[in-house]
Length: 116
Length: 112
Image 1 (tube, rainbow over the protein chains, first blue to last red):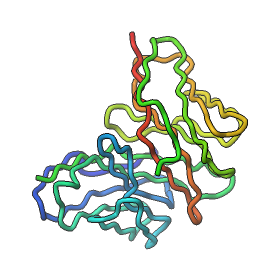
Image 2 (image 1 turned 180 degrees about the vertical axis):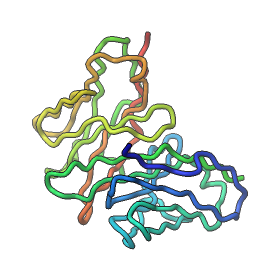
Image 3 (image 1 turned 90 degrees about the vertical axis):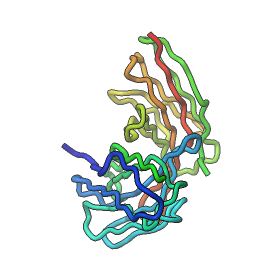
Image 4 (image 1 turned 60 degrees about the horizontal axis):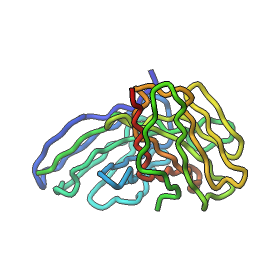
């Protein structure tokens, strides 16, 4: 089954304790991205990657890092989490822009992070 | 900034058609309109997309005005399971790939 898998689904942590949220897709997609969702603000893009070893900042990258060492994985790293990073996080993947190819994004099921 | 505006909420009777409007008056010629929905706090789910022609699939129909400044998503026979937040999104071309700019969506409640 084609899917995007995030882990963990729920996480409560303390301020300053480094954490990683994993994201993996099995569709051989080139493009992957991370979003955060907060009440009243919709989904905002944190980082994206157009292919292996290619990453770039989205709209709200402060306080986050990413890496793309393999095509299927795109982990989100919070080096020193703070309470304002409490949010619902989504990973998404899609095919690279190519004429004739379907390029809708597939989203993971989300990770609810609470930083206390 | 989001390139779309949608009403914050709508109700629809079960079995009736749900018509969800979206304004995208600043859309560019090569930018597609995508619709996704989000049930509870699950990951957004793709519904349909279009450029300038009307589109239909097994889930919904998409009607785009001739000037492309607005569109309507139609769920022909809404069920209780269609209760969700519906996002109208303009997919922006971004140096070799795409970017989805989400607004705050329309919260559709299907009533029994």
